[in-house]
Amino acid sequence: MSRLTTLYRSTLGKKAIVAVTGIMLFGFVVMHMIGNLKTLTGNDAEGIPHIDTYAHFLRTMGAPILPETFALWGARIILLIALVLHLVIVAQLTLQNYAARPIPYTRKVYVQTTITARSMLVSGILLLVFIVLHILQFTTGTIDITPIVPKTVYANLYYAFSEWYIAFFYVLAMGVLGLHVYHGVWSLFQTLGLDNPDRNRGLLRMAAASAIILVLGFCSVPVLIQFRFLPAPTQVSTPIDELAGGH
Image (cartoon, rainbow, N blue to C red):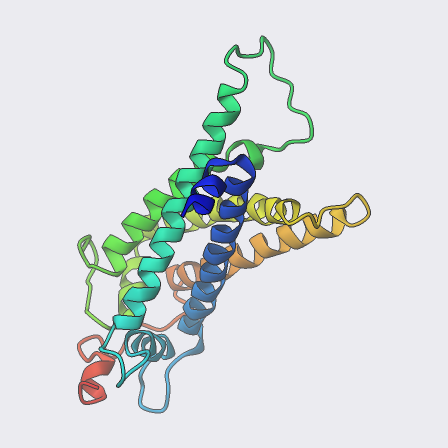
């Protein structure tokens, strides 16, 4: 325990924790995007949207050994811990940087830094607000400004993103995510000691490509729904659990 405490208290240890939690969160975001893209693949032979089948799989992972949603909630708790650690330590590191220069510069001159680097804490806070609102709307149904039908993901997404303001703010949030991921991936390369003048250009391109792919992947769903390139849901009142006999 003392070693973990020492690691947490050191600047190098904090950066390592930020890197590890960042990898976990980045992996989740990638998998979440891939899952969201099932919205675009249509329905199966029984007319059930593929995204609903995927959501059913997530709820029943580990069955029948594990109770329904047990594995899903386990993953959510781990990700929540990673998210809290990530944000708290980034905030601590930012405050440490300010404390190291208690007297502000008369004129700030940024050397080898970018607006994405300087706004990581702000973009992280904005993403946290978005995550909370996103969960309240699509997971708990607390925000019900559009029709919410339990366990019918496609219908819920379709009715939500049919509203222009929801689609707009979602796309805006994904833009913030892209900026955060771009600098986050680049910082990860630096923390792992992979950066080198000979390959930095390639690493920066990889970071940019990661951000662009995520933004385009996430934004494709609300944009295509908003412009009616995706069909309206046909089984709004029949969740997949009922069609599967409750299993």
